[in-house]
Image 1 (cartoon, rainbow, N blue to C red):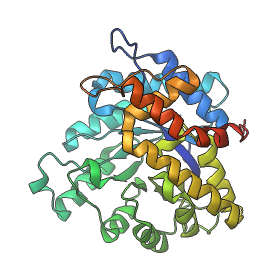
Image 2 (cartoon, rainbow, N blue to C red):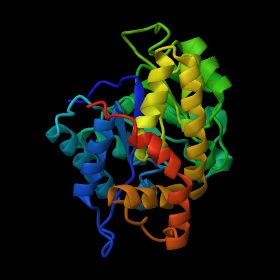
Image 3 (tube, rainbow, N blue to C red):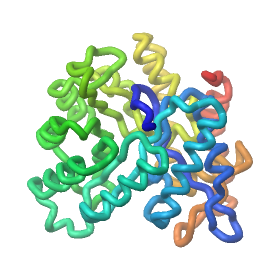
Image 4 (cartoon, one colour):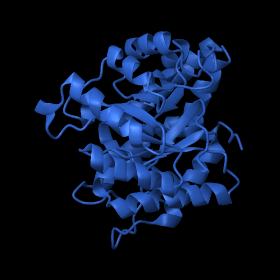
Length: 322
């Protein structure tokens, strides 16, 4: 049965391969998710941009989610929901992935705007796409607003508010990084929040920050938490910023957010290869991306690990939640 979504920090997890064959390394995929759960993330996202979903076959995407769900359940984290990336270029293809996500143990799906035929994607077409998918999806939909991954298409707050009225659209991930947009949507929709009362407990809506450098501002304007890649390598630090923010310890939260924003920029500049280099150095797993994406050179990996060493000291000084 699908787990209920919740507030807090979600980690859009990396995917891991056997180096020699590029086959999925299911054991490491599961072990990584469990490590993050112990650090205090309240949810996992599979098959997102951090998870190299565009490099995976349909069967592989199901395998990633199944392996993640099985590992979490076996480790005592059955309560943790999994949001599954299910973006495709057509309504039909997207619905196939939505059905796969439900079978594999997902709790909701995360959908970007189709963008290959950008010229065709005016506001009415985008609204129709999300509505048709939500009408037929077996899982609730989270709208993924990530202009950088969809040829610059940036959903405005008016459209997001209209989509929020659909009974099977239950949130947005704001990887646009736009605090004002999140604030406008939060003001109109009243999402589930640990600091502001939600308007509709029967049909909850979640407004998640999509970048680690605005966890604190998103909480302050009524957001629900964050789905951020940095939680793969700094999970405790991400959780700490969120917890300080909802506890109203704003001076500590500001300092923690400033530190996380600095470290997250080091990650952002290197992308997936950088995440994997850090995981390999500090945790003994990570490996390399699937080709054609290149891994960092040994020299670049050493430079990155030295650059973020101070933040790993911060991370390692924070306790696991579980």
